[in-house]
Each structure stands twice: as C-alpha cells, then as structure tokens.
Image (tube, rainbow over all chains, first blue to last red; front, side, top):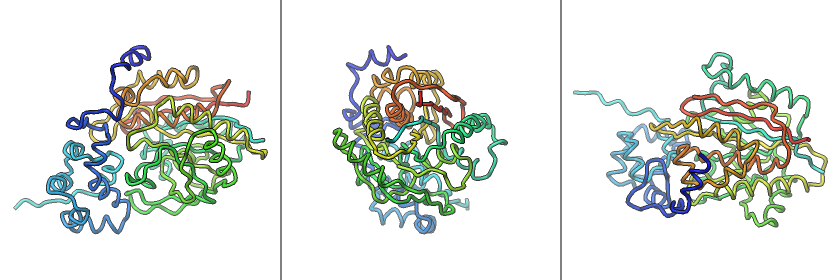
Amino acid sequence: MIGSAAGKRPGAAAAWESDVSKIQTGKFDRDAAQKGYELNKMCYSLNSADNRVSFAADEEAYCRRYALGEAEQAAVIARDKPRLFELGGNMYFLAKLDRVPKRQTTPM
Amino acid sequence: MAQIIGGLSTSHVPTIGRAIAGGKQREVPFAPFFEAFGPVHDWLDETKPDVAIVIYNDHGLNFFLDNMPTFAVGAAHEYRNADEGWGPPAPRVFRGAPALSWHIIGSLVADEFDVSTCQELIFDHAGITALDLAWEGHGPKPVAVVPIVVNAVMPPLPTPKRCYAFGQAIGRAIRSFDEDVKVLVIGSGGLSHELGQFGKINQSFDQLCMEKIVADPEALTRYSNDDIVDLAGAQGLELMTWLVMRGAVSGDVEVIKSLYFAPISHTGGAMMLLDNRC
C-alpha cells in the first residue's frame, strides 16, 4: 500500500493545486477557504452560547449579520451538508452548526 | 537535562470525552479502548513525568481562518477549556510550563521551524481528552503542559515529511532544556475518519499506520496530504499529530501498549504508548 500510494505521487497534484471548480467533499482547499470565509466565520461564532441563542431565534437574520448570500443562508437553514461543502464550508466549523438543533417547522 | 521518557498517541473524538465526563468508560461499546489505558496508567505511575507536550489539531476553537499558523506553540502560564458549541463546560485550568515553552520556541526557530508563539491559547478538546485518558477523569493533572498545534484545517497544510521533521526538532529542543524534567510527548489525533455525513474508516490503512509509526515512520512521510485524505478521509490528516510525536520520540522505543479499535463513533480509534527510556 505504501508502494502504490508513493508510486502515484509524481503525477499527483499538490494539495494547493486542486481545481477551483471541483471542491471535493471534505477536501478543503484555498479556493474553499476564500469562498466559504463568511460561512465558516458564522459557524465559528456558534462556539458562543449567546450567539447560539441569537442564531436559533432568527437564523436568517443571524446569517445576514455575517453577510451570507441567499445560497449560503438556504444551505445553513436546511443544514444541507453537501451544499455547505460546495459553498466552501469546512467541517471543523460546520461541526459547530451541527451542534445547534435544527429549527422544527410545523406543517400547516 | 530534560529527558523524553516516552510518547503517547490517541484518538480524541468527542464520544470519548463524553464517556469520560459521564463516567461510562466501562459501559460504552468501545470499552476496550479505555481498558487499553490501564497499562498506560501503570506506566505513568512508575515513570511520573513532570511535563506533557501535547501535540494536537485545533477544532475551530482557538484558531479561525483569519490567522492560521502552520505550527503554534503555547507559552502561557495556564490553559483553559471553553465552550466548543456543546454548551459551556465546567471550567478547567491546566498548568503551563512557560520556561520550557519559550526554550522549545527558541530552539525550533533557531532550527528553522518558524512557529507562532501563543501566550494565550484556549485548550481544545483534542488536547484535553488525551490528558483525561492518560490521567483518567477530570481531576487535576500531575503534569504541566505545553500545547503544540498543527494546522489540519486550512491548506496549504504541512506535509507528513515536514511534520516528522518538526517532531524531530521538538525532540532536540526538549533534550537541550537545562532542567531535570521528565517529558511525555503526546500526539492526539484520529486515524482514518471524515466528519459530517460521509464517515470513512480505512482499517487496513490504519493498521499500516500503527505498524509504521513504530517501526518505520519515515515510510509514512512519503505520502502527500492528498494521498492521506484519499486513503483516510479529510480528518485522517490528524495522523500528522502521531508523526510529530514519533519524530520527537526518536531512536529505539518499546511498545508498552497499542490498540486499534473500530469504530468509535465513526472513526478508527487507536492508541499507542512508546517507552523511550532505552
């Protein structure tokens, strides 16, 4: 296994050379770091109990405070993990979002 | 002079910390993982280290994407835990070893590892869980700590080769400290795993890592970071903490205890204690 993995190295792209358009799930790269900066910053803020209360009270308003766009807001509210990764979310910060209970919507 | 007496590496998934907090180590499905620390407790009772160097990756607690050091060394008089999103924890304080920290930082920079110096650092569960496994429970620890953080979050990440060399430099730094302290080097990180909904465990790769860490750590330095993500999942990069530990604990080692247990939560759980006194 060592041999095969080492063997494919010469052709393999370095971590920082990955394609902008294909942010592989979980493989956070420099493009994701830029694209997802505000999203991850919002998630990072959820370390604070007070911020979690504010977030839970009005998720949309809280996201706007962090200047998240509509796509980011929708993905956050839906807790749509694949979409959050596409938008540049980093798992270490998305984990903070996972720790906030998802809002229950009552069907009419 | 300071002496490195051994190296301990362990997984630190929050499930482990929750089991310790609830005193449920004997009840959880992964109880064998906790049982494996029995020989560690015996060994620590015998060897009585004064300081634990705790190498881990921050989990979005102390560091954000605004300032992300590749390697950061704590130089505080004490370190505290904090809310990581699960709710405010009972406050805990861990005694620092600032004189040793500053010595290590000076030695590392002279050795061309330009680390960040942290006179304040919130202590992540990754570091705390390792200490709570080594000295079971939430009581005060009989060691001072020097936290060392390896960036596993924002690329470009340090390569496995660089992490191993960093560990070797930490080893040189510790051994050149002019006080008679006994030092345990801890590497806290999971083997294969990927958080989120994509959990990934690669048991054969994990087993290979367990073997190579002991007998041939340089073999692991031939992987690229992307190789490791492909083989072991995005959070499999926490293997770097093991490589740093092994670099510091250089030369001949005796394996006191080693266990691979999968799954714990959705990771491959692993621990290893290496005696470096030979």
